[in-house]
Amino acid sequence: MKPATVTAFCPGHISGYFRRVDGRDPATTGSIGAGIVISEGVTATVRSADQTSVVVRVRPPEGEPAEISRSSPPLSSALDRLDVTLAVETVCRLPIGAGFGLSAAALLATLTATDRLLNLGLSADEIAEVAHETEVIFRTGLGDVAACQGGGRVVRTGPGIHGTILRCFDIDAPVCAVSFGPIHTPDVLGSPTQMARVAAAFPARQPETYTDFFACCRDFSAASGLETPAVQRVLAECDRHHIPAAMTMLGDGVFACGDHAFEVLHPFGRVYGMGMADAGVRIVEAAT
Image (tube, rainbow, N blue to C red; front, side, top):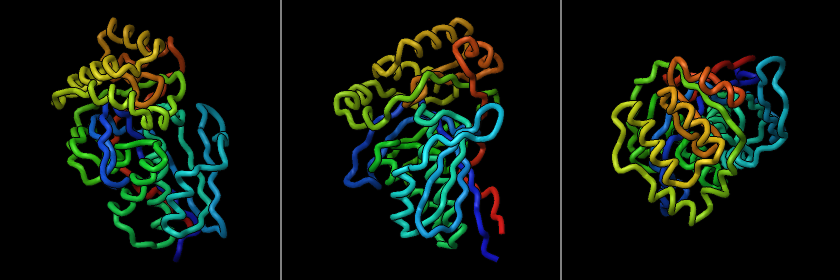
């Protein structure tokens, strides 16, 4: 029996450092870099409709998810590309636009649920291709889709979804984050001057351990000029307590790893607790 609604979940991705790679088209354009696929992400529920509609909700610590938007141009564009019309609802717990890879997660979750609902027969690669190209076109991300195809701590050495990705599952401690607000990703990714500085800051080595990963991230954020004063204050406090930490890319915030990360970050605002994801996008429910 064909399901009436399908729900899928995709983990988010915190990028620690990156470098834009311009290709001949959106499929070959992307980034290289490293980050952590996180256990928090986006849940998307889709159902058939005569015209596409999108509702975006954020779940507070207590109570029901609050509606924050009734549109998502990237999601609507991706569905148009598949020549389908659906009613879509996305729900997340983390703040949107704050460096948690939620735009990529929303696209992958929505398209995966769409494929299941309408029995489109798309492969995981075909779904990821649409999501990645949509991100590039709308300048909402460059490498998050590739990372979110699986879990772990990732090092991406090639752009796009077919680039080489090393996944290490070496973080079992809590990952915590504090956010001071969004950084407008299209402004950064669309600035030749800022992208040149980011490229010059890219680490010369690939991190072999998660502590080395954080060290590379710190060197990158300092040299790239992306650190805000608020981020610098939090990083200094994490250093004082010997907590591995780095700036969320691209967001005005800090992520840290360790059993005491929550208490060190807590004085600076709401702390979001999570862990490293062990897998990528997946179907959660197909309800009749």
